[in-house]
Image 1 (cartoon, rainbow, N blue to C red):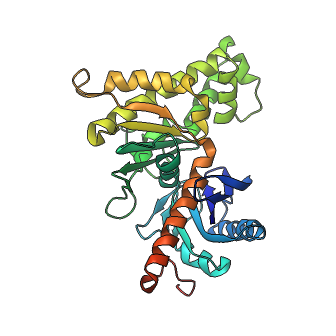
Image 2: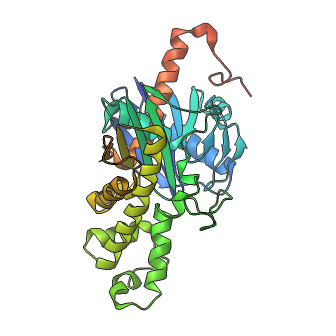
Image 3: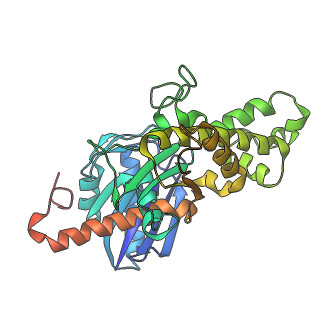
Length: 329
């Protein structure tokens, strides 16, 4: 029994054939189809058709960076992709001839880590995915918390600096403008252009700088890049403290591309979290842990969510909703 999981972020689209145990048996990677909703749909259909030639696929799950409705059918808005009120799941189901669900990419990643990875055994777990932006999700008592309209977890778009940096979501001062790959690249570009001799390593990189390039320099020991990563960790820890004040999780799981920086990022984040946590000294600390699956978490979780929905459909064949019907839409 296998499903296909697809994770579409701001810069890349990764897909994989995933077993019921969360094992990837085949994968695909390509740039994100960001120009139009139709282009994204065509790219998904192409990769599903290609992977299905070698595997008997039961269902397809799509994890997308954006606001997804509670029925797992429609992407309402994506700050980094060309989706606005797109009922993508029923359209894809018609084209790939299989059940399809769509969910927020952080929800998908959290589901993978909760079931198979670093969050196993937790009662309340918050997952943050640090890439181009910040994705967020929470699992409590074995269930993804979706909120009233299916769009919970968008903590990256909470205002952490009133009147601060403009954000693609339309607001200012959002957390992801200070604790994401985009934020790391922006700060590095300013430092590289300053003429500071300490930033020579940044200035020598191909321009424009990316968060990934800055991260590689930090892992190689470049002092300016290491300092920028630590600064980003401070912002991350501040946001974790804010989340803990309201949601009180046992564990924070940090995933996405920036999580590959490991303790260069997580140690400053842990320290800042403890400095800023309300009631510190009188309450337990949540564990801040690196994700197990790295950039694979989104596709593993999307496949697992799709398979779970397919299983529920098989258990209640008389209750097939528009979400699962190829004839819907």
